[in-house]
Image (cartoon, rainbow, N blue to C red):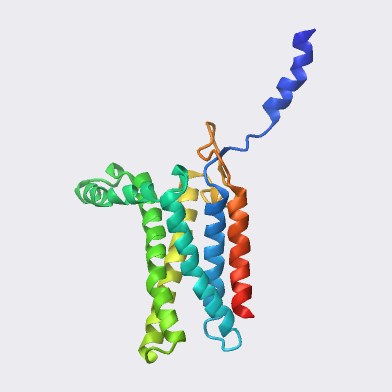
Length: 222
């Protein structure tokens, strides 16, 4: 009788799809989408005098979000820290040497190369925010001439190309691996078995980040 009664539960559990492992916490995902939305909004409103205040507000928000990510990546939980990214990039010279020394394309570790490319693009975007924001502030405060506007536009276009390359690299990697690599930044979870890499989702911090970001933009527009 006991084996019969437990059979429906066993069948039901076998049919229940796995939700995967949690690999990205809520604050990191909130930063990602706020950062992307801030740049996209600032880029779209960059040439409009009507929306100039929105452009400026979003332009100020980007370095503020960068500051949050750096602090969270240094003092935050282990799984959200930026140190693994720096260590991953440290292997770039060795991978380039292996690519140069390999006689056949099959000898190259392309999977490792994909990860290095994506990590490099992420770091490049974070670094590009600094001159982009500084040149934008200089233009807004009228500290220089037209050349500063050209500098600001250059870094804006460069950031757009980096962002496009980042998305293209993720799409290409997803196709090659037959696994959507963009889902974790949406749901926080990746397919596969095993323990969660993120022990605490810290939803409260993500909510605070959203509220602070929206409140900052609203305050700038008043």
